[in-house]
Image 1: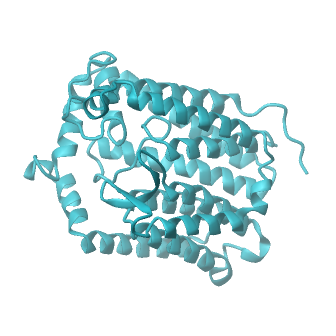
Image 2: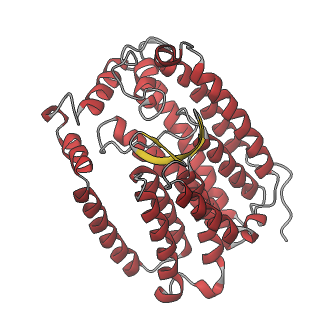
Image 3: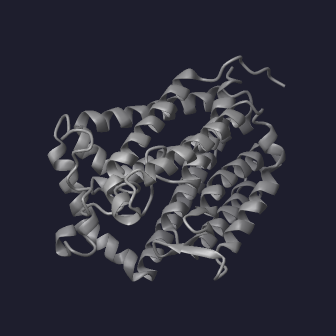
Length: 365
């Protein structure tokens, strides 16, 4: 066993803590108006965010100090548990419907989202599976096909909720693990073509998804319907300019931008902190990706390399999609911005995963 270094990657820790601090400030600033209107307490969202951030930091500290090889032993059990949660959430009367998707388990306003657990559970399992020599990813039938089967099953169950956003993030991060594992390019190209065809099929199968596509291509065709979210988001970003209107001075958070504390928090950040604030946040995410991939490259074994790459993939895919939606480059998918957006299970699980990444960085060659 390779001996761990005395300290994890400090660049990574500073970037994560900085993003979390910015997120807490922005959750209050972006969500105070909605919180007061809905709950009579301007601090409702930020108080809960502080609670989840505290729990997440505790979880990150624990996973940062637990040998990452431990997760290899529990990869199968963890994946089975994630599948059980995904199935349970589909049962009427047990699963809670929010935003049109039956994707939550919980009581009242407190709940967990099993698809968030599946993101990490799938990455751990694929890293374990593809690090075993008998599951060589260059072998289509023994390596790639079983991996695709597990991924496809999880994606299919998530789509029954339906939750295309979470499913897309899980698939994107999983494909990064497969790529890093050394998949043959001809297999990857074929997989990409099948994936595009499947995505088109999913869009055509649900009229509301097709409306999102047409609304994304030309939001002004239906400014009060499918194009409303993108238009209001751009109205927030535009006035921000170089330095922003000032913290707390957003106008679009007054019932214009939908979900200002979650999906569209980046547009409020752009309005209040301007181009400089946006660039700062993006640079911090780039530091997370840079140091995470460095940990993947310098990890002492294949399992550590794949696991680190997968965790980086979860972060990177969510950031790309969320920012892409906010600036009008992608259709609305309902994906939050990691460490910044308001959220319970998503924030806690993200910090837990980043703790695992920090532990891998301690074993860097």
